Image (cartoon, rainbow, N blue to C red; front, side, top):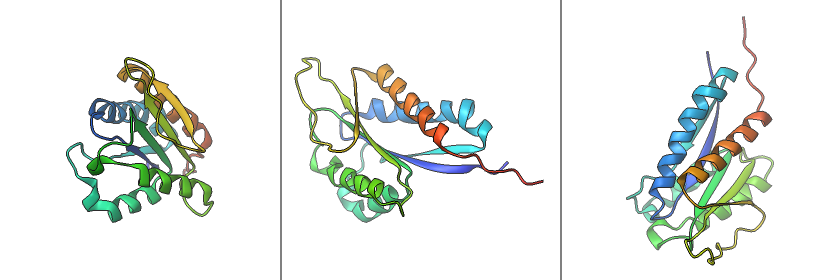
Length: 159
């Protein structure tokens, strides 16, 4: 069966590798249980944890533009220069606003600090979801995937 594929970019600055890995785990579970039986495959896209993204800006931009959904995971700030996704998030927002682009939604998932007082960087015009740990993060990603799946039309099978 051919699958209708939709790319989901998950941007994680340094220090949030557990969340990046959880994103991949949830995507696999979700595809097997819900998306694939409907003829849809959600394709996970992210940057490996040790990669200095500054060297790959053009490729990063191409990947963001090709995605249907964008998840920006943040903690106290946008991350160090080698893992700063502020520019990519701005591009994702521009893509959401352009009906000619495949991007339909960009969301911010903000990890609350133990003190709970830090505020996330500005991420105007996007949905914001706060989470305290990896399990809560997994639940938010799973809920977003479920909502997005409901908006996608499965391909028509041909005889």
